[in-house]
Amino acid sequence: MQLLSIGELAVMLGVAVVTLRRWHRAGKLLPAYRTIGGHRRYDVMKVREVMSLTQKAEGKTIAYARVSSHDQKEQLQSQALRLRRHREEQRWANVEVITDLGSGLNYKKKGLLKLLAEILHHRVGRLVLVTKDRLLRFGAELLFRICAIHGVEVAVLDADEDIPNEQQLTEDLVEILTVFSSRLYGSRSRKNLRALAAQA
Image 1 (tube, rainbow, N blue to C red):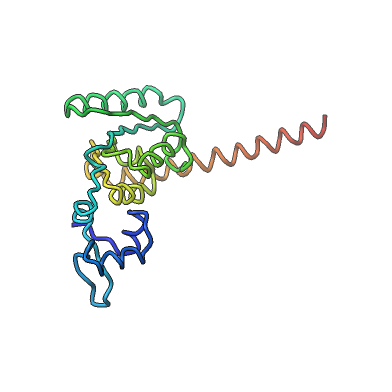
Image 2: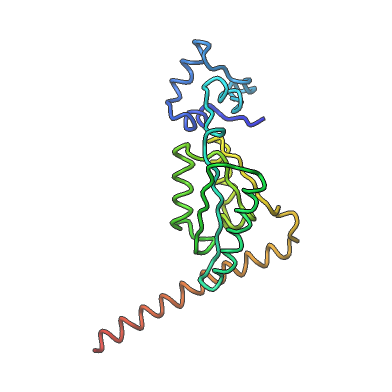
């Protein structure tokens, strides 16, 4: 059971908190229970039944694949192929594959922003990933929370539990060092270019 506060539910439904209180008084939408402090807690599934929110059944499936750099394009194709095969095995209809090229620490990737927009506009019923870190290196849980609020099922083909903790930490550290190194050398490169331009 997934429970939301009245504020979280207001965001999910796109209405004001006072509207939810009014619906409660009218018996239209009742909370699952109240906390000891008197705060309302709503069961997401029951809310969807009452409000007839069936986007999950109607929405498309998005298969998302990402690699960090251009020299990993073969891995990107491999991810996309695996996601397509999984789609065929599950016999899902209305599937879109989104591929991204960029760091797992980059929150402004074109494909990621498109995915988020599709979710927020209630056009997605299912999100499929090869591994969780293909979405984001850090912060994937936040996007998974957004998926839960909008009724989007998340399917991860390879669970993190299969990867040793030491390997996960090493990969995280390498990702961080790679990003900061590229930013540092990129910054120095721009400074050198500006200095040469000034001398010229």
